[in-house]
Length: 221
Image (cartoon, rainbow, N blue to C red; front, side):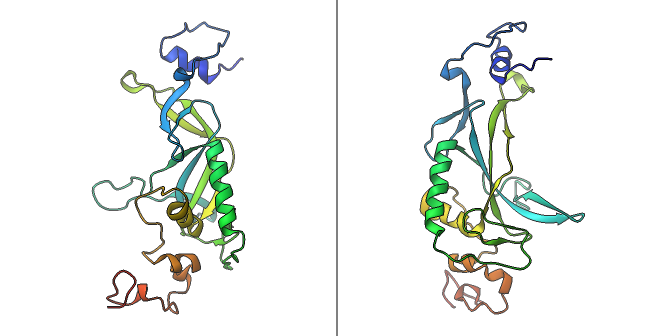
């Protein structure tokens, strides 16, 4: 059975071509354009073109298996919402961003831990259970089969395992490369220096002022 392309299905959902159309024709650029934009260049993303979705997640062990879970808001008005908004990149923009990140960390010694579940694909640091990380999924935007209220909706379809971006590299991306999120990137509210050394693994011996009782803005009170 022949599977119709998403671009033809997209036309049919909009009533642009009849259901029995067999030959797919090239679509004008506007017809393939989605509402999603690249966070780096702000261009619209197009259906079925290769893109990257960056999500902030954390690894956990459930039932003896390693799983990746979304990092979400637990309290407040919108529990369950993403704490850090998932972001889309054009593939070329992601490649440029990834290359810049590799250059920033190429001479930094990796921070390792015997309890690691995985390692960062950029700096080779250990990533342990419940530590936030970025997951960069390569995939495509497709038209969803469900069209609530007659509106065209989209879904992201991953086509490969994600690249893992440790919390330290996320800090570099957010603060030195693209300013991706308004929220600070950290594990437990620590300063950036403590983030890079993973002080929460050794908080009993960390002497940074940001941990001092009554401290404010990294200074002892």
